[in-house]
Length: 451
Image (cartoon, rainbow, N blue to C red; front, side):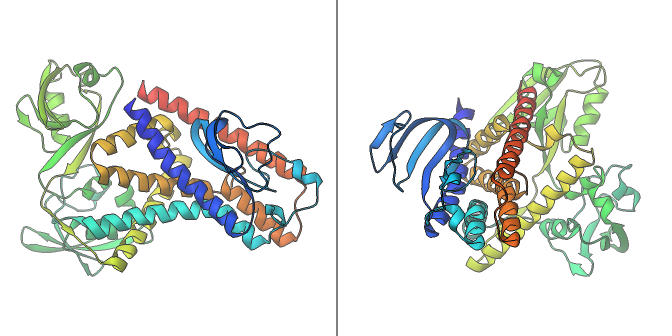
């Protein structure tokens, strides 16, 4: 129930902000908006200026005459603004047989149409920027005060290139580094093919060149955690695994296994494998509580958990001024967009499964609940990331999405005439069916992952 409530809160905020963008842009262009809906399908309740607050469907003969019906609908998977004179999710084409009215979408110029259709994405970007700005301005950025490289696997590309655990990174490409955020920011720049590192190794200066490929390799990416006391957090528990049977949950933190203190995920794997013939006592931290559970590793010496090394070393919060916070927020958004593009490329290349990369309502509900349990700041951070994701998805030039409408409007503007109505309806239908199929697959993947 808590998952469902947090899902409704999260989706409600994001959908409202997105659709409010379309709504206010249409009003600014003097276009009628017949419906402002949170949710799809059957109208549950709503308000309009003609007959006030009502439950259920509106009377068929009701004429709103330019007023908007604000409503909550049955299916909480999105929302829409029904804009007069536009072919959208409602598939209403009655207006097509009449001459365009001055208050209809189709009577406006190309710039106004593009503004209305892109306003939802703009509002999602503004929400993301506002949340990130608030976090940088009021709370500041958490700075990890270390440039010392943490544990590296011997077979990793970074290790083979010459990096050694304990190396302190003094500069990269002649830019001095004093904390791990500066290190990560430079090394995550995909436009830079080669990095020249100046390292301090046991008091000696070492010059080393490494390539971008070494930073994006799954094993090479391990160097992104600096050397420091760490907390080994459980990111995922495999269904029906020894860990699940023992009662271990996502979000738990490994403290010790068979009395051995766990500092890294590699420590955990070694201890579990060394005791694969018998049950092991696992001390975990869950919230403020310390628990001890017993688990029997499987025949491969595994408990069935995905681990994550969380930095637990010295840090400080660095605050920023008003405009500096805006700059930091914009830069952070660009980095997230770049990382998203990287993972999308990985999906199309077959390196990452589609179901693992994209989540639906169940996954959103799980992350929303967990972030809310961690506090308001974590929930807002999750909301900002989801808002940015919604903007990126919607701007994609695919039929039935804002980006698809944008592309059609642009083509019509260049041609100086509208495309045939039947063509636009067909494109909308095909896009809508594909989106429904895609959503069904994502929900199915969510269910398999959750249950």
